[in-house]
Image 1 (cartoon, rainbow, N blue to C red):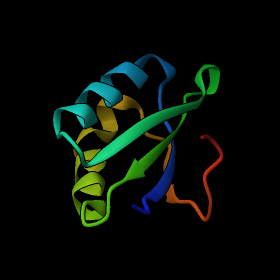
Image 2: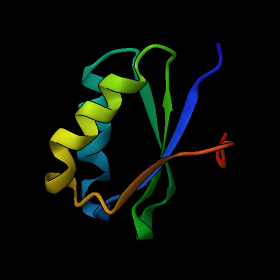
Image 3: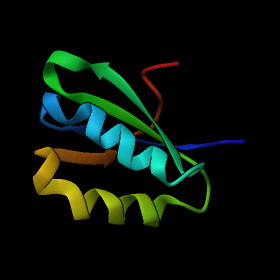
Length: 78
């Protein structure tokens, strides 16, 4: 299954919170931490769930200190 990759920068203290939120929607995405000290994460989104993940990220943006979110052309983590 091909996934859609997004990259984001959030408050580093909120990485666990983001991961818990995404995991609560079983099967929609996986959160990978690329650089914890900077709060840079990657989201591997299952096909068909891109809009839902964007909605979730927008809903919790202030709470997680979202600085940016963009669709990546390739994964940086494995």
